[in-house]
Every structure is written in C-alpha cells, then in structure tokens.
Amino acid sequence: MRRVMLLILCILLASCSSTPPPQQQLPKSHVATQKATTTEEKLYKEVQWQEWGDVALLRAKIKHRPIAVYFYEEGCQFCDMMDATTFSDPAVVKLLNEHFVPIKSRGLENTNAMDVLFNSQAVFPALAFLGPDGTLLISVNGYVPPDNYRKALETIVKAMK
Image (cartoon, rainbow, N blue to C red; front, side):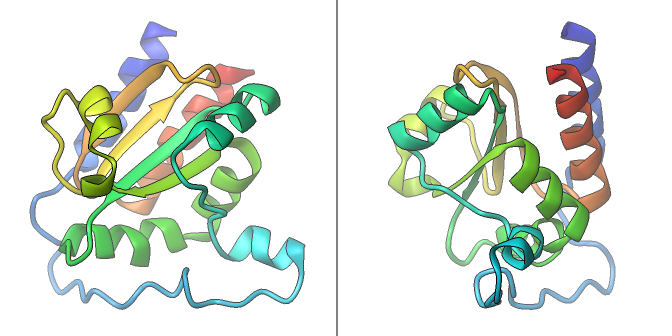
C-alpha cells in the first residue's frame, strides 16, 4: 500500500502547476450547468459531488469506496481550470462516480477539514484522497491535468481491490 501511495504522490506532484498551460483559455465550467435527461446520462456527464459531512463519510464506509475530496475557492484561476478540464473529462467523471465518493467543498467554509487534511498549509485547489474509513491516503495542492488525475484514480481503484 505504501508503494501505491508513493506512486500516486509522484503522479500528482509531477502534474501540479503554478502557472496555466500556454495558450490555455479558462472556459466556464459546464459541469454545473449541464442538465442530463436520465440518471445514466448524468452519471457520465458530471461528477456527482457531495457535501463534506457525516452523510458522505458514512456512504463511503458503507459502500467501501475511497473518498476524493476537492477543496476550491471562488475566483481561483486554477480551481476554474480544474472544473473546466479535469472534472469535465469523461474518463475522470466516470471513475469518480463509479468508484469514489466525490466531495466538493469551499475551502474557506470548511477550515476544520482543511486543517486536518493539509496541516494548515493548503492552497487552492486542494485535493485529498481518503480511505473508506476516512483515513488520509494522500493530499496535494494545485492544478492536476485530467490524464494525471485519471491515473491517480485508477491506481487507487486497483489498490482498493
């Protein structure tokens, strides 16, 4: 398990960026505005985000699913980029909805969780992966491109089997 976590850390850290990719335009996220006509369509078109709290943590425990936490802030350029690219990628959406309990929370409204998961050192976006029991597996700050985030999700799914 330690090797798996080190692999995930390497994938995520290799992709973190403090500057946007060249010529990258930041389109508004269509994840929040898309309307799906059926449950199945919705499952693959947008991440089924849940709020941070006991209900989401209990759901992870009951379903024995890891938790993918995404802390963001309004007006954060890299948070907007995560929404527009990473969390709009069909493969990422499918993996999050089928194998994780995805949680999205405004960081400044949830400082207790931020302090615990990031030792008061988080910048936005802040990402964390927890085990089904709520144990922190890994946390990372900064933008992560879709391919790297997908690889991290796939690695966690394989480790959980």
